[in-house]
Length: 510
Ligand code: MN
Image (tube, rainbow, N blue to C red; front, top):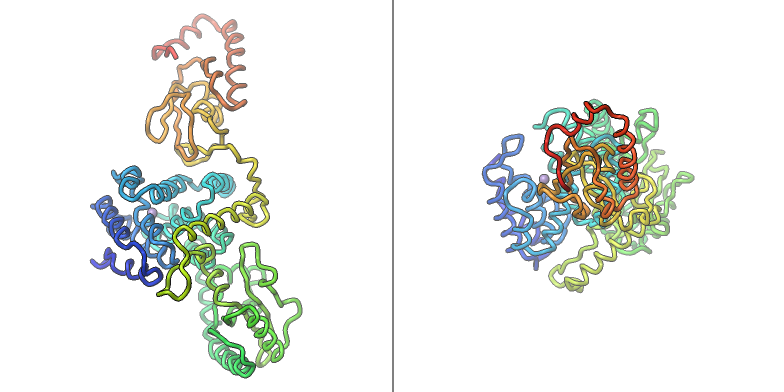
């Protein structure tokens, strides 16, 4: 890596370009803290660690998110991997940034352990995290840079990260309407998950697109002329190429025959107003005959993730089948950047600037919408099963050291946690380690805590006093039934066995 790779100037320029009023000083201070915290650390490929958060922050700035989210991106690995704590970050940058980073750290504790368990865990986490999309955006930026630098990792780890991105992250990006992120996640992972298939599709697409480019240009010119004659204002007409992973999925559905793929290259027309979209559709259909059943009005009926556009597939010049996508500039922004498109900035006074609070308000509303969708299960994460949010109300989600998520009622204690894992762990629990601190067994847990139960194999069983504070009937039943069975066992055991059981460590009072 060159020296300039850890230069913050390009990042600041990027932020300035979409938000001239951004607090760049704060971003600079975040960078300085990250520089100090990660000093001397290197990534698997030997490059300075700092390059990673800096690149993640740049990916966030490409999404044009507010500066404080970019700053959080710069600091996202600090509490996890350095001696600087989340508390230090809170003191220096305030609650909001500290909360975002804590969210990223928690989400990072989820480990991929096979698709089914992972979906279950992630589903719970998303509800628990109140679907703070800012956290998800930072996590996505983090993941994209990790995928870009995956080659330096051992094969098994590479495959795990890529699979996880493909099966979990990309569908979530899709549900949030983050099209650009989704395609990047998919294509970056695809190469690692199925290297041979990836090369096959890439070669196929390259040849097919090369053969089409002149033709597409010809159609573009003709359409431009027609639209001009009809006085329809046009912002741009451009060819868009299908991204590799979605092309691959389509090829699988169509006997791997690229001739059957009609939207490998589509023409995308951006116009100022909704009325112009329909007028443009009319012009296209006047000139070329549409294929039956291939006209899609996602403006009148948006896709569940909010996507809006008109699509039509026509028999075009020389009888070739071509897809057109028509949308306004605003719809395009939304289609590419999804939820991230809702932050607005003062572009040299071009449009009214919502005050900081209004922006946050819009953001909160957006969040509420996402959660409402989650509640009905109609669209958000619908591929991951129907979500019933009421089931999760008044629940907390606690991690095991290996990254599983255990869901418990509010106020649950390490004893409830222990029994939720296994009755023997509950029976032999003597203490708990919560986020690395030794904690009493009756101390209530909170969402996102990482809990480890300290057991003593010589412990004879649960303490009946635990019944005073446990919150789950599962734990309560076990404690009660153990008390009963111990009585029975006691009468059955030989004096020798009883003596052995009490051997070892001195028994605890409590
Ligand atoms: Mn990271």
